[in-house]
Image 1 (cartoon, rainbow, N blue to C red):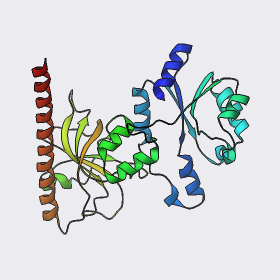
Image 2 (image 1 turned 90 degrees about the vertical axis):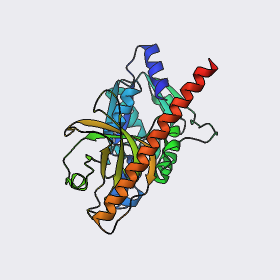
Image 3 (image 1 turned 120 degrees about the vertical axis):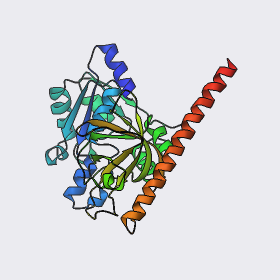
Image 4 (image 1 turned 180 degrees about the vertical axis):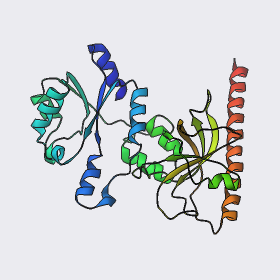
Length: 295
């Protein structure tokens, strides 16, 4: 869809633009109705969403605040005030099931009838097996820790970005100093221990082990934190903006009886991560050798 937007913009001499809503409309209604359990888990933070859009070629992103005013806005007003007057839309791409306006009264047909611009609708995108790709599928795969499935749905490896902040320094005490990144509470779809690679600390990504969750052994705050132990790394990363790419889930998050047991588990995680990276590098080398043999 983004590729189609960028292509159409180039053909027409327009700026490829995306409109998104903050918060998610379902999140807003869950809060209004005091039903927080109905709020969808976010696939990514707003920062990661903007970075992904930029990497896809989008040059302008409109982050429209979804509040009571927007929720009550008639579909006709949405077209006139936001799309025509606000954005001067010339060409618009939406999904074939797109609905908008109060009580979801607006649809693709209304856009074509009332909008002073060209409207194109796109059919649902399917995966290699012919299944419709949706955000719900991504959330399900994240919850299951199926990172290969997530990558297949998204078109890239799942990742989180953020600035490295100071933590409790517990990892350093245990012999495994970590990079700490705050995670928005809405981004709770993925938890566990993972083999990862970290971008932003040099010309090449650095391998590591990440813990993503609430750290039940050391705190009961319930706050989500991403902690990354980099393999064979020594340096100061505080304040740097890094991107953590999740490669393989090693295990679920656990609550251990004491810090000694936790330390032993971390040692096992590091060993498993090293084995994963060694096997991955070996597989890549074998593939390269096979390709050379065929030539």
